[in-house]
Length: 142
Image (cartoon, rainbow, N blue to C red; front, side):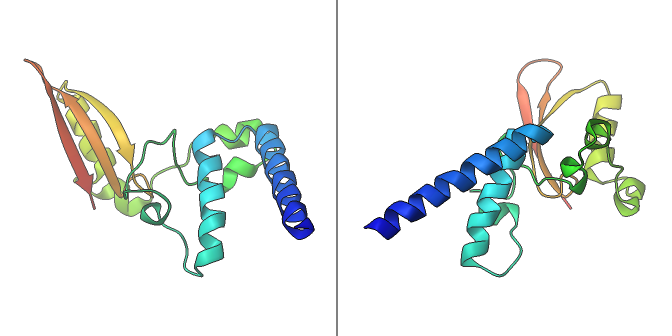
């Protein structure tokens, strides 16, 4: 019984340390959740985790679950906020999700990203507010 208590105390200590480190660098809640779920996944599997392994679907709300970028752990706040560009093969493909999103917005449609996959340009769920009435869901994948 003493071992179970010591294990629980160690687990709580690790969670507190994780929260303190995440607070120090300002890690978003969705990225904190990804790290915790990925750690639990790593105890069961040697394979790298995917969104579908950590979540109920291959897409999720970014505020709920998002893969942290390497720059999210940089101590410099400006480096953490810096945007990363799209890979060349995504930017050059006219039918890629970011380019289709841009085309829909250029056509004066009100488009919102509802859920993102991992990586975000690979799979997404969009919602388009139609000009007349109603909304139309769109699902995009590579």
